[in-house]
Length: 236
Picture 1 (cartoon, rainbow, N blue to C red):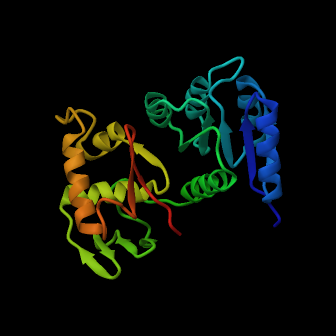
Picture 2: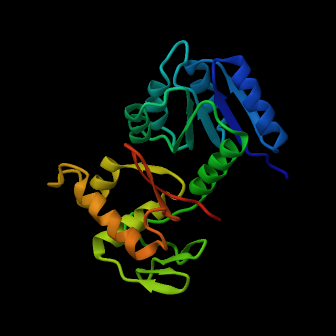
C-alpha cells in the first residue's frame, strides 16, 4: 500500500508500548510511540496520526486531560487502552470524546478489531438526523434505508416507532462505538429534556430488541455495555 495507516500509541510502560508496536507493525500499520501526555500531544500535532491509542495512567498528565485537550482541536479517533476498568471512568472517557475503551490486559484480535472499527467510523458519514448520503447502513442481515426511514432484518421490514428509529440510527451512525446512556438520552430527548434516568431508554431498547433480534436475551446487533451504555456491533 502506498500510504500506511499511522497509529500513535501514548503509553508509558515500555513493555506494553513495545508489545503494541510489534502487533501493529506486523499487521501493516506505521507506529509512533510516546511515553508521556505532553509528548503525545506534540506528536499528534506534528504527525497527524490516523488513530491514537491512549493510556490513562501517564507520568505527567492524566490521560483524560490529554483527551480533553485533543478534543478541543482534533477529531482523530481515540481508543483508550487502560488498566482502569471502573464503569465511571469508562463513561467519563467516552463522554469526553473517546471512540472506544479497551481494558488491559487485552487480546491481539480484540485490539485489531477495535482499531478497524474506529477507522471505518472515521471514514463514514451519516448526518445526525439519520439521513445518509444515499447509501444504506448494512451489517449482517440488518439494513437501514435512511432516505426512506425504513429498517429491515433479513429483508423483512421492522416497524419501529419514531423514537426507536432514532435510537437505532444513532447507534448505526456510531457503529462499533459504545454510546453512554447520557449521550443517547441527550441526542434523542435533548440536553434539556425531562428524562431523568435510563428507564425510558431501557424500555425502548427492550422493544427494539423484541422487534429486531431473533433472541432478544442474546442480542446480535445491539449489545449492552453494563453500567455504561449500548454498542451497535460492527459485523461487516
